[in-house]
Length: 277
Image 1 (cartoon, rainbow, N blue to C red):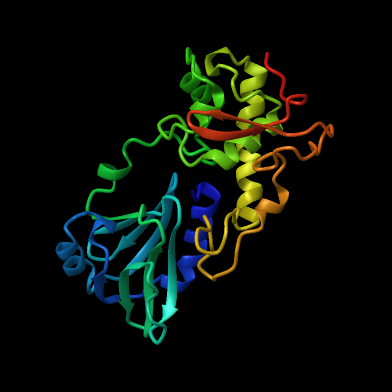
Image 2 (image 1 turned 45 degrees about the vertical axis):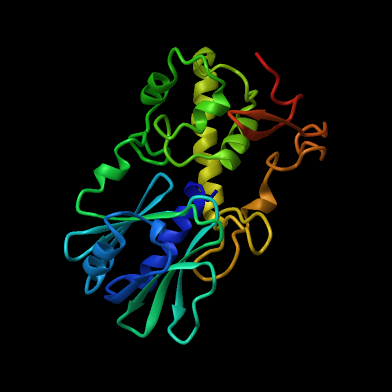
């Protein structure tokens, strides 16, 4: 699933392509893609609207329109949002088509059909459940400590909870825990202040490095988790230290990377560098 770095890459690269562009008309080819309003109302309200603002909240793209609506996009596992020439025919995985005033087309594609779009006048209705942004200047150690205080769940599971921290998913939770030297099953409420500080810093470092590389592109061509709006892949997968490296040597100590399942998600770690307790 695209996580914070992949969605941030989308927002940054879509901004110059879409800023000021007007949607001339739209077509919904897979109605379930539209979470709200109805597909018919979506087409009516977005037609004629112009893109004027581009933000990210957690794993959501938040695209402001000049008529008061906000287009919110969640890519889920295999969603992609691309600008194509109008002459390029939509493929079988294209579920929403928006024709632009410059002769191009904005397509939402998703091979697994899990991605969703919202068109709303109140983004808070969709985003209110999200916790703090890990790269926000207001994401303080005090808030981080308060979020984890008394938590008995494994720290890996807590990092995946979007109400605790927004935007971190499986890839960057594994990578941040490795960088901080923390075992993924350690209880969140039992982390010491130095451990909390190390994880706080590691989350930010890993996310910033991944954004710099355009995110991580994994999987095959039909089920790839992330393709940038330009069509190019991200490059951060080449810098992964533990994620999906089961059996390969740890880059720090050489011990084989191990895998376990936490919160129904594959978890990768070095048992030497990330000892429990």
